[in-house]
Length: 508
Image (cartoon, rainbow, N blue to C red; front, side, top):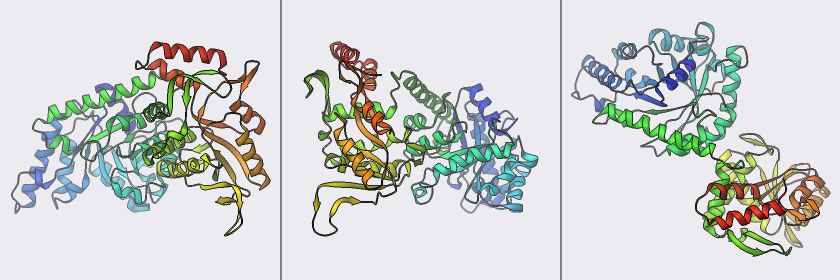
């Protein structure tokens, strides 16, 4: 069986996502500082074997870190092979060696890892391309070996290099796996290493590589949030992730109990995430629920009885002007970015269908700025930003437009809401006059209601129809209804009023 088939089967068999690290730190071996290599190696072997004996009922896989064995000197490799041979055959072994080379060197590393050491899978650096991965998953190791590729690791320094390329690595991992297998749909031979400290990167990796296993270090001492990590990284079946833990087990007084508790804590979090996803009403995404809750906290969204300009009595009111602090704007920008990246405006999890964001004066200016910043911060998408003035400037650079050039560029218009659609139509007209190409509109709230009782089309639908571009919202009336339906925090009369309003004025 292939490495990842064994991972999957073992995970199902013992109902666990726990991967146990075997890192024989010298400080944990209880040997004298001047002990010879043989003594230290014997202590390292006993250290690892005691962890294996205590934790095997809960471990999907064991992950010995080759560096700690190499540091033992001459006896190091023999100690590593002895550790691996002591692991029950039913449990796959992942050698954490992070190799990254090509040609005969990569082939030698594969031989050393699989044949000489006895490991079933490895961790690799993919920065030298497919050439550095191929020897580990093809040839004599085809259908047997497997590799987790470093994608976005849990250390802060990974931001320096991996932030901008993590999405590409995740996408390539899927392509390389198919290339190595020689056919689409086979059991993947590659996975990804994505730190639990970066939920956005996990979400991005899962979007790009839906069928791959993810090794997600960083829960615990490094500050990774288990629930957030699982929410972002679990596959559609509530699996597909391994959570590796080393010191949290090796330094525990009762290692067996520590491993059991970790397995149970991970499963409890997994259950919360899976149940939360299954309870979504009317397609509410996590970012939409968070946005509604935040809007309520800020007083931006209120439920009650409100008279609109149209004369209708609405059971809710939305005033985006109350997002009036740095913290509020920061969260608002993230919600816009999440809605855009989950819509048809996204090409992949790290690229979009537009080149520039345009924020029409006045409210659109700040909104466009925070959305551009959030797209870069959360998804590594770097696009231009521009806005207009209400009146032309007669000094300096002059003109009505400020920021990135939009001529010949694909442009996304960002605003808070669409009431009649007049402002969006004016923006569209202005953009086409300067030879820009409007490709979409992003708004915070779609009221999704008829313009008149005898008109079955909403203002948003009319804009999308007339301008032939998509309009994407963070939330709409459908999501507000779903949120209320699934929440026990509101009086039944509010849900009843929204239900009635949706029935009378809502559009599909």
